[in-house]
Length: 129
Image 1 (cartoon, rainbow, N blue to C red):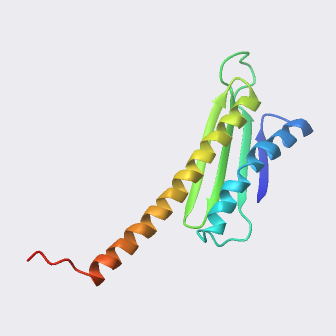
Image 2: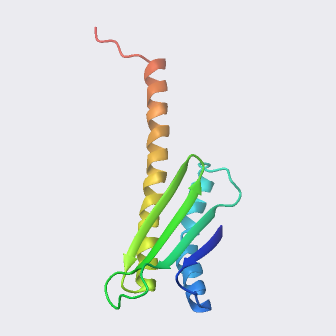
Image 3: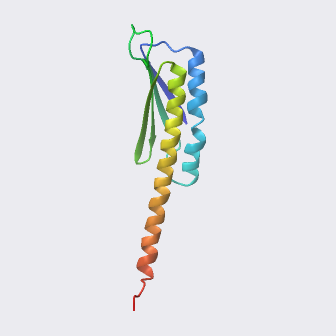
C-alpha cells in the first residue's frame, strides 16, 4: 500500500508524517483481506491523504481538515473529517475509512451470494404442485 500525503496551508513535520503513516497504514490489513478474498486485483493500492488548515486567522474551532481516498477496483472510497486538532482529524478519517472498507467488503460478499442463490434457484426450480 502506498500512502501519498498532500498538505495545504501547513508545512507538515516529520512527526505528522509518521503519525499519518502509522494510522493510515493500519488500514493495510483491511485492504489485504479484500485482496485475499480476490476482490481487488491491483498489486498496489494507493491511498491519497490530504491535510490542511482551512483558515489562517481563526484561533479555535474545527479548522483542520483531513481527507483520504482509496482507489479499489470498481470503487473509490473517500472520507473527510474536520477537527480542532490535526491528529484528531486524522484518527477520525482512519476510523471512517475502516468502516467504509468493511461496508465495501460486505457488499461484495452479498452480491456474490445473491448471484449464487439465483443460479441455484434457476437450476433447481421449486414446484408448487
